[in-house]
Image (cartoon, rainbow, N blue to C red):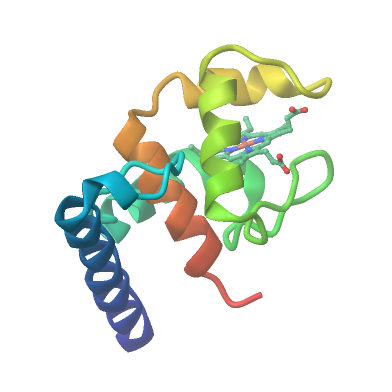
Length: 122
Ligand code: HEC
């Protein structure tokens, strides 16, 4: 719990620095796929527990045909979720993910991508 708190506090600090930076000098702002907003770890945790861990495992470690996702870069994961949400197929079981991703907002995707990459001991 303490570890989680420290983690989310540092993520919020870190993301608000990015946010402030992109407004301070918008012309030099990096063109990233991730929207600049404060990462809401608690919101992501709720979605993960309700909608993701049933397939991907308690620590997103994967099982059988459900891939491990706790080692993905947040940018990669956000891109993948957006593409599933748009209905893109990658493998034989993509339909399972397309159904999941359709329920996610842009913010949910950004939050989940950071949460899943940072929340678990691997
Ligand atoms: C019904 C089971 C199921 C649920 C629930 C589910 N997934 Fe998946 N997920 C899969 C399967 C199966 C794949 C592989 C799909 C394919 O073949 O493209 C996958 C793939 C992924 C990938 C791509 C992995 C890679 O290496 O590219 C990501 C990211 C992902 N899931 C995230 C999530 C998140 C976040 C949630 C919760 C919102 C979630 N999944 C909920 C079954 C599920």
